[in-house]
Image (tube, rainbow, N blue to C red; front, side):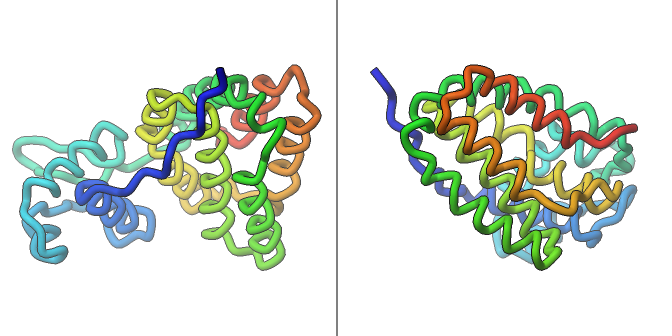
Length: 211
């Protein structure tokens, strides 16, 4: 029996704080090596320090920040090798997701199509931020279509949008066009390509920065 796709996830307070900190790292508000002060963030966002502390712990797991007893919490100086490591893990997860979602997406790709349409507009405008956002949204919907909550949670925990944005902004790994290759994946689902899992895996690995 085919399971229904998972419902949208409403961000928690901790997730919203995490997104605020991530945006600061990605935008350059906090530079590599710069200290992030938990109390200042709590005051700025008008929240207690507890959810800020929890968000910082999650970002430390993602290796975006590092903490030490004497230096506090600081932004990590990321290298191409740091960014490259995430892609084989992501590719494996999305290969599984594609295989689980294949039957559902063969019948209905409506969750993916708006993201490709948005990517066409972003490509035409050269809007890097929109390219990242809609690329990640496409892949999130693909994983969500698997109907496997553990898989989706694991994928989300990798911080895909953060790493993709950092790869573009810090390493210049931006492509000129994103819509075409994602349309190719939709077409592969529709024609029920037996290699769909491998195609998705190859697509993700092809996006990885090179050290």
